[in-house]
Image (tube, rainbow, N blue to C red; front, side, top):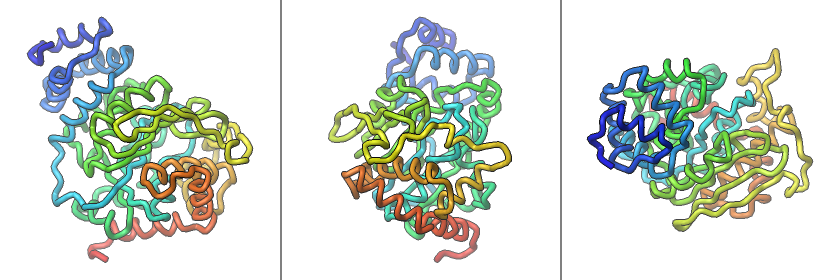
Length: 347
């Protein structure tokens, strides 16, 4: 397969259900970055890739091309960092679980580099809720990076780092469906974390996302698809997991009932009328929130502890996270980051 194929030829390959090789995948991404693909063709490419399903090789190649054009203003911190960015797009309208997980894990000593964006195919993305809570998403980039060292957590607002993709946002919003960029988002964290918990919106994404993380050299990772269709582990039933470790993929399941806690419908995690995402996130982080909210965050945080290598026993990790939540430590962590990113001085 040649990277010299025309846009139409590449589109036909995808419409025939065939995978692109590394060079063609990279060429396609370069054309997007260089504005060599029209809006009409972009819509067709995104639809064709969604219908075919992206392979791990395609995702890895396109992600690496995006990372190659993302320059850091200063050296990457010499830290073991974890990301909790998932694909989004599950359409479940739950509160921002992976965002809460980031602050809980950080409050327990995990260095978190959280990558995220405003919503493209759903209602509220991680950036939306953090912005509404007063987090400065546009502070100097060197301060965003230094926050990992100083606070133990940072938030990397994707459009600030991947400016070349901003022009695709309106089209993705108009399409209103999950696209390859939902899958690429968790793979292109500018700080290149060592480990990751990556939620996916459908179980057919488990293997390709796990394969992409493996090919990109991730030390340890878990790809999770939640019972009931969530892009995080849920309390409803069996959650499917792919463990990425030692150059291999290992498939498994986890259920909150394994921890002697009751299964709870995903309806309990949906943001109800008259309540905001921001209110739920705050009450979860400060320990005053609903039991189901705190438990689903603790369950997902246990996965972060595993990839970070600080707790291999998921039950112990769950209890550790729940303890921190009930003592309000994650909210204190959020306030530290909020104040740091808004301040003109380093700590």
